[in-house]
Image 1: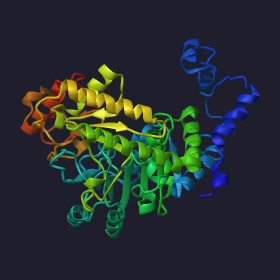
Image 2: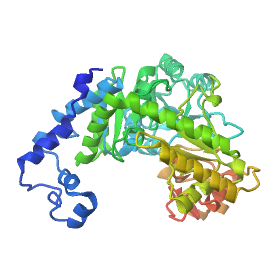
Image 3: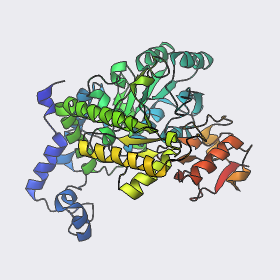
Image 4: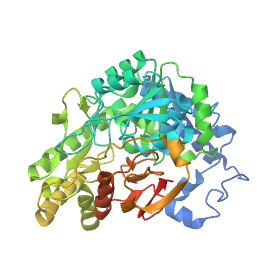
Length: 482
């Protein structure tokens, strides 16, 4: 990586030049640098609103970049060790979906673990590909899905030699990493493309002694959520390609769904954040690792909680662990993760990333401070003292492996009828239902509804999880295939 080149931020520099020219705007957006919407200026600030501009020759165009955006993408590719990088403004959802749409068409098989983000299964609804799920093992104590093992993958590859691609989420929301190098080598041996959902792995490209990143492991494409651990604005992401993937074709796929009015606030934030990581990433993520490890030790010292880490590594189903993830099992104090999540927010003014049935996740990144960590630790100690209950776990597992009866696309567009959730056992689901975050579907279109799944949904709802994906906004009813 050329450090001198990485000091450039071409989109940011072009915006600075535009500001100096005092151009009179007779284009969109209609707020005209904020003059038409003073309340928006008051909220966001004049500088921010003045940079919310439309594509023009000096600023290039994200759909067909030829100048400053093209240079920004080249710098991102160099920084991340990829052949090409696309700036994405539809979140990592759009990056994941573009990977799948670029490799799969109607009827094609794609192999993936069932605990993928909903964006991956949404892509199957759009393109008509058929999922073949490789079921990861579950840690029996903390109830989270582990990584995909070589043995599991080889078995599924042997049984589905006609599949076109494999998608792996690495690291998972909880920090679990699979053996990405060997999995990629195996997938390539069968002539398939290796796609990696790296939404939670931006820092793997810049930190020392962290799990290997997808590009270094030899994957073909990777979706990287820069706004999560990379410091860019929410909704900004990168799509990376490798191994001679046709970048011009991928651009065409991206342009099928991505906006033609890309936000320069988002693209410039990607540009500036890439520069920041290239110049200071290693130093920054060393601090993140130290803070996360400190928090892990302090939380475990409280008792009852279990902030898990590297001790989970077994070289197989947990090949490595991302220690920047502060995942904490809470059922040891008799509370679900969502109950602790709610208490932290409502009683202690602490907003963590999510709480599910068994765990919470506090996202530690380049913007955190040690005093914030200490406040979190103190609040968790207080919650244990004030709210601890019988610690007998009721449910485990961050998802239940459902049976696929028909493809997501076929089910989604089939005639459906609405039934109360309690009356849907034995039916085929016609929509999504999930706790969000983390956005892993409990049920997806085309999957068989069982009593166990219904009980899980009702328990999650009773404990305060936000159920999403259903046509019924209250999630009292489910659409099933007629």
